[in-house]
Image 1 (tube, helix red, strand yellow):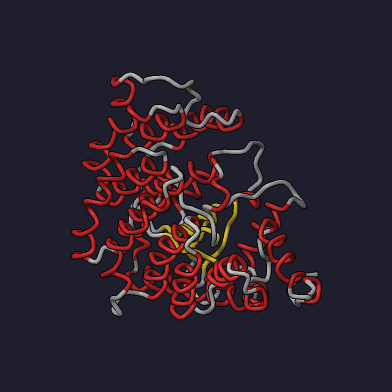
Image 2 (spheres, rainbow, N blue to C red):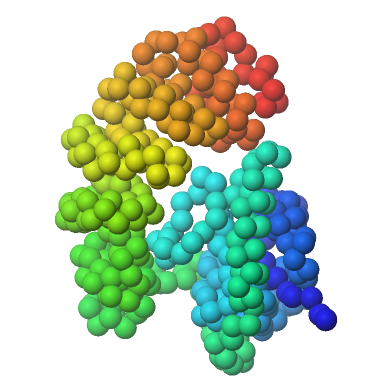
Length: 393
């Protein structure tokens, strides 16, 4: 019996580039390990002989593979196109994204696994989570779903045009700011129309698309769209999110609650009105963060949105108390230790801040470079040395 095929869709990059290294790590450290016991033949696009970026061979794998694993990290246009073609088939697909990256609107409503390859412990945990996803598909024997049956020749013709647009970084069209015609918006798929309106700076047109998003893509995508508009300082969208949350809390739709609160936080933070948002968000999330039946990571996410507003408003003592609660909920999340250090430093509790920085560095083996100057500053004030921390060379 021939092996099942898993096609890996991921950003690949040029040989010896940082993106290629990431792609190889994703494939070898995560995908191959998680698939090892399931008997798959694993294929990636750069292993297929071809003359161009996108070919029939790739799309044939996208459509015909028993399983596709998609890495959405770096928001690569080719990856999104191939991912979309895969979803049309109805065949098993697992989406992943690197920890710390935000899912774009178009796929925010689709179940996506966050992975972390920064150290052996987090890599092992990511392998376990991906294995669970695969076990669910394997147990259901879902590999027999049929593809969309679209002619490969037709797809290849379409791809030839898409490829040129990708090369020109014009996947959905570059429009100058201004009002888009309703006829143009109605002719486009809802998510494409929404994205095009946003890219052209036309909030009014983006809001015009909202009812179609709700009708055809569902409530989660609608909430995600409202959240994007709230982030763009649209008060009406922010108010609608606030009005929706009590019902979402009753239904315990935690993913939607997180999206909505994130949009509300962004509205107040981006409009330099953090103080005004504190009581609003606190009232909205109170029942959720006090509900022990809800996942600790989800409760911590919501509490951290409140903590950030307090920090931005200069209410460091209150924000510090929230940070301690965050660490109690999720003690191994380096970001919460970093936030604790920020508040401690603002309160001149330097030794405590240095302790928190050291904990952050111990948990995060590859901290983002923009975080290191603060870490160096705090450790220096406490008479300690950044280079002496084991994770930093």
